[in-house]
Structures are given as C-alpha cells and as structure tokens.
Amino acid sequence: MTIGRPTFASDNWSGIHPDVLAAIIAANAGHAPAYGADPVTAEAVRLFRQHFGEGAEVFFTFNGTGANVVGLQSMLYPFQCVICADGAHINVDECGAPEKHLGSKLVPVPTPDGKLTPDLVESVATGAGNEHHVQPRVVSIAQATELGTCYSLEEVSALGSWAHTHGMLLHLDGARLSNAAAFLGVGLGDVGEACGVDVLSFGGTKNGAMGAEAVIVLRPEAAGSLPYIRKQSMQLASKMRFVSAQFVALLSDDLWRRNAEHSNAMARRLADGVSRVPGVTVSQPVQSNAVFATLPTSVAEALQRDFPFYLWDDTTGQARWMASFDTTEDDVDEFVKRLAELS
Image (cartoon, rainbow, N blue to C red; front, side, top):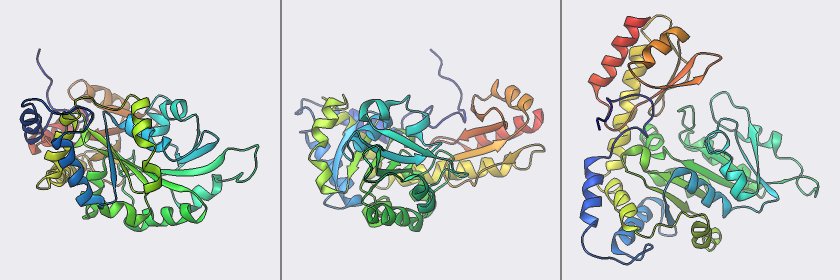
C-alpha cells in the first residue's frame, strides 16, 4: 500500500514523530503491569506534573472525544449543562457523544472567532435555581479554538474567574494546547490552574503522537470519580505503557514545543503565501497551525484534486488548511504555487 503525499487536510493525517515511535518501541521490552501500574506511565505522570503542578491528576485516554467526555463527566450532573462556542469540537465534531454519555445539555453560543467571553457566557447562563431549567455548571473552551485562534492568558483567566464567581467550573479542550502555548510563548501549565481551569484535555495525537490524549484534573475533588468514569467510558488502556510512552517522548526535552512551533511556523508561511494569490482571503488570524481562507469554489475543487483539504463552510467558500509537525517549506511552497496556477 502506498501512503499519500503530504496534505493540509488535517494534522491527524500526519505520521508519528520518530522520537515518539522510538519511545513506543523502547516500551515494547518484556512484560509490565497492566492498566497504568507500570514505570513508563509513572514517568509520564511525573512529567505532566512538572508542567501542571504536583497536585495534578492525570488520566490517559485513547482519543480526544474520549478525553473530553471523561473529563466533562467528572464535572457535572445530567440536569446541568455545558456552555460552549457553537463551533466547538464537543458541539460539532463528536457525533453527539458528550450529550449521549453525559446525559447533559450543551448550550452553544455563536462566536465570530471561536472564543467565548464572560459576557457571551452570561447571556445564556440562565435558569439557575429554577427546577424547570437545566442548571449552568461548566464553561468549556478550546485552546486553540476550532478556528485556529488562541485565548490569551488574560482571556482564560477572565472566564475562569467569572465561572467560579457564579458557582461554575471551567473545562478546556486542549487538543491543540501545545500549538496555543507555543504561539503565546508560555508553558503548558500557564494555561492551567493559574488561569482558573479546573479540568482539561491534553492532546498528543495532533502533535506527533500515534494516538495519545490525557485528562488533567486540577480540581482535586473531581479526581476521585475519574478512574471509574474512564473505565465505564471504555477509555482505560490495558497496555497503558504504549500510550504513556508517547507522552514521555513529547514532554521530554520540549519535543511538544518544537513540534508545535514548527507546525505554527508552516501555517504562518502558508498564510503569507496564499494571501498574495488573487481571489484568496485569509479569514481568521493565524495563531496556531490552522489557516482559514476563502476562495472561489471552482478553484477549491480543482485544488482538492491535488491537495485534499476540508471546505469548512460551503456557503462562504471558506477552507481550512492544517500544518503538521512534519510539514516542510517545500510542501507549503508547492501548495501555494498550485493555488496560484489555478486562480
């Protein structure tokens, strides 16, 4: 079987970083206790605590949807709701999994840039104390957002402060948290407890891992239920060491940051290149590894035959192009050249 050429369809299309693959192979020696009672998992947890604090509780999962569902389930009852951006992954791209498995309502809020604000949240956080209404309990944000934008630390802190003042909790979907931290020039943990985040998902798959996500609990009282929620949600790996090994590689020697900085830089190069092509307009700030742009439908369809990618909005002609840890300058320049030829 021949694997396809590099594309800008998704950072999920990329392969495994060699250091991550080497870590998996190194973990494949002899026998080790199952379900996370192994030394590789202990090392991964230690590394996470270096970033997020010694009080952080860490629970590894198979995928991002599982991490979001497991984390959110520890935060609310079925009669409570989660407030999120209307384009949030939990609302649009998880096939209703959060609502099915939580039994809780998602309350989506329209946003122009994928980001919530305290005012936007307050506009829908109604019905508190009224038994006829779902009770507002969790504010969920994504960092980076589904539109590739990033919350500043101040913006996250404002949401955390608002949530806690109103008896609510703050959840962060960090499928691309590495890219956001690289853009902001901060550490992973800086977008955590210090900003009022209670529970977050941390993504490795989109940043060079084979398949590794984690739920990081920064609110100690929420951690007690997580082992049971994870197991019941079918997210507990028996051979956990192979999931953990991926995080050991990513969190050692700042591989997470190098990968993220590279994919961010390739996205910036791509945005600079396509913005010079007539008829193409970059439609969102490029703050992570995503480029959103509008272009004529005929051009997009022709370009997709050479470089698969997703049309994000058929009505506006908005496309999404994602750079990965293994995207090269030549990949970007070839894409831009072909786009210019078709325009």
